[in-house]
Amino acid sequence: MPSHTLPHAPDGEASSTAVDDVRLRVDSATLGYDRRVISRSLSVSIPDESFTVIVGPNACGKSTLLRGLSRLLRPSAGQVVLDGTDIHTYRAKEVARRIGLLPQSSIAPDGITVADLVSRGRYPHQRLIRQWTDTDEQAVLHAMEATSVSGLSTRLVDELSGGQRQRVWVAMALAQETGIMLLDEPTTFLDITHQIELLELFTDLHLAGRTLIAVLHDLNHAARYGTHLIAMKDGAVVAEGAPSDIVTAELVEEVFGLRCLVVADPVTGSPAVVPLGRDRPRGRA
Image 1 (cartoon, rainbow, N blue to C red):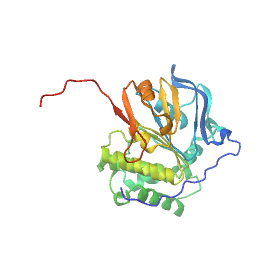
Image 2: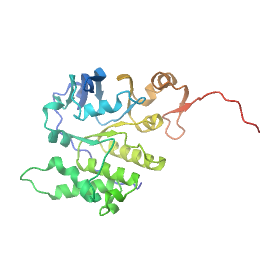
Image 3: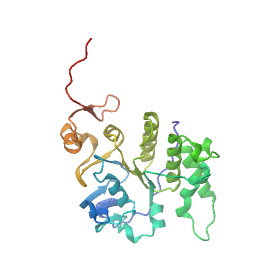
Image 4: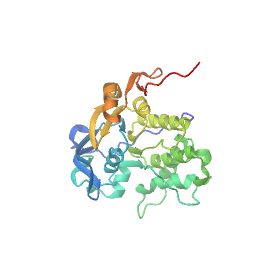
């Protein structure tokens, strides 16, 4: 993916009363669906301007935590705090001006072009008497340029490849111009080339000043690109911190049940997980 100059993250509307000096956190929250509890008494603080990655086995509560952070899921106890205030006291549009969300499954309306879909990212900034402005136009153009989809602006979204479509959805979230972005399994179903392109883009967004929180399945990708990891199992946080501090063979076995070696990535020096697998007889020469 070509390198582009990314717009710096907006300052947002952070409150001076925010506890622990972080914009987004979870305080002793119980999260679940109907009567099924996924996480109980969960507390997490997201470091500002970090690329935080949530990892763990399937059905451990990763996406549930992300839904709680995005205001899509209301805790039955405790609270999610955004800029010093319970996130559920904000109107949905106000949250959307502060937090951008790339959901796990995104379906574009039939017959919509790339430019039109990215433009929908400006919806939180629209008001009854406020029409489309040059500021909106520039935000959309910058978002498409940053995600390398400017040349696709007139194409129909449903005609694009999986990697192209995912970049378009990222552009729509970027056009919201929020200081915080939530990414739910953004690399799922993409081939390795498109996975790396997207993760490199997220790193650029993080370096431009945004706070990113992503759910990823690939632990090596998480350790290479994340600056802060949250490892979950059975709805609880098992460990959190910098990848170099927490990714060990013992943690991987505890969380994933996988015997492995943890070595230094030869390119970045970040922890890299090498599965040991099972002992097998060697094949004939």
